[in-house]
Image (cartoon, rainbow, N blue to C red; front, side):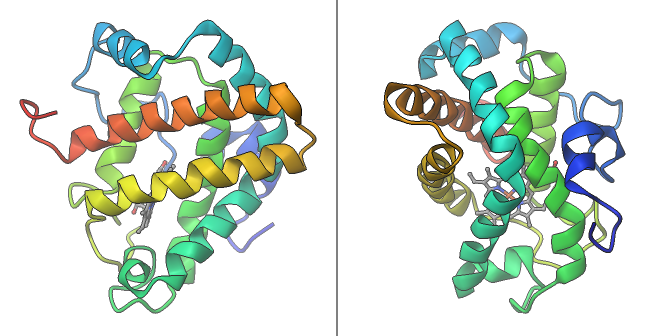
Length: 208
Ligand code: HEM
């Protein structure tokens, strides 16, 4: 348990108890997109029912590893001085309170990316996460002292790290061969869908 009283069990079993996690609730943003828009994006990324099934299997492996995955990703973000001020204080020094407060939501995202149905609640929360990376809502949830906007170029660039390192975690959790390929392909599509939706908060509607 950390100083905020979160345990891995909270993240897995009771996400509704994670502070600031407004998935499915009235506080979350409304997505400007419709389910029809979403079905076109799913088609564009090549997302199928097989991917849904493979993601559920991947989720059983990644749920146990989510905390470690986010810890490792954040270490990478801290190591690059030009990125440190977005998760730390504006001058790049560590901000442990902000890190601890936001981490359970990031951990939970890995599970959500594998198991949540891609419905209107999911669509809405992707808009919310996008906004929370921009000056519209960054820092607000945790009242954090940190830079107020993560440039879109870094959001997109870091996607490569999230996708490639997930394969190592699937393998470490026992996946191998064609099944590892299958789960990793599904996770890749899922991450691309998520991050693409998050960019909606950055880009004028007509350009997006
Ligand atoms: C593919 C890349 C990325 C993924 C998958 C990702 C994922 C997430 C998720 C799931 C959350 C929690 C949203 C919530 O409140 O429920 C989050 C928040 C956050 N992320 Fe990212 N992120 C990415 C890129 C980045 C980058 C590049 C940085 C920093 C340079 C960053 C810094 C943060 C910070 C500081 C928060 C807390 C935002 C707040 O104040 O509410 N993220 N991220």
